[in-house]
Image (cartoon, rainbow, N blue to C red; front, side, top):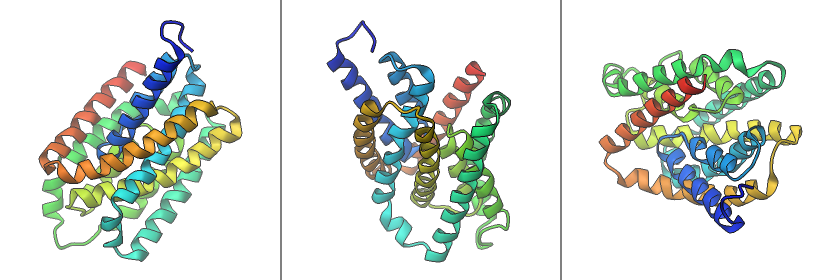
Length: 252
């Protein structure tokens, strides 16, 4: 733990970061950029902080899924089952790659992927109008597989990529995009967290504390996303994407 603040203040810091991360993940993604620095500041080593952060934010996706359950229930059951299965398979492949390959090669691509995803999301409404009445394009499922592999290997910016994918493939309602993003993010996060747990990299006291607050934040964020004007949410998503891209460019 950091010597500059009392233990109680550090627990409050990590808890507040986890709640805010749950809210942000429900609306736009990028919650790990709150939880990871908070854990490092609290004295957790960077590798363990990364693993514990992933564990902390993963239940927040479940809270968001519950918050968007009406949107998910309105979608065809077979579509949901098919896409969840693809997300699970892709996540397993990505997690396997994470365990056997160095992250440096892939991390160099991350800021460019985030910039591309943000640009695609910004162009989403125009592209969705062009695709109106054409149904889901054939590349939607292969695209989901690619994003799922990315998410299993490296979770940063997963929400932005999923929102870009669904916007580009005909989902014109932002709440539906958010619901699908959170559902598949939850599936993927379970897999990455399992890999970290097997590796023994999770600091469990902080993880359990932050999990509870991230779940509450995810539920609150799902409700907030429904009440905010669509334009505000879109601008928040794009701003988050640009900030995340900048952070990754600095780190790479």
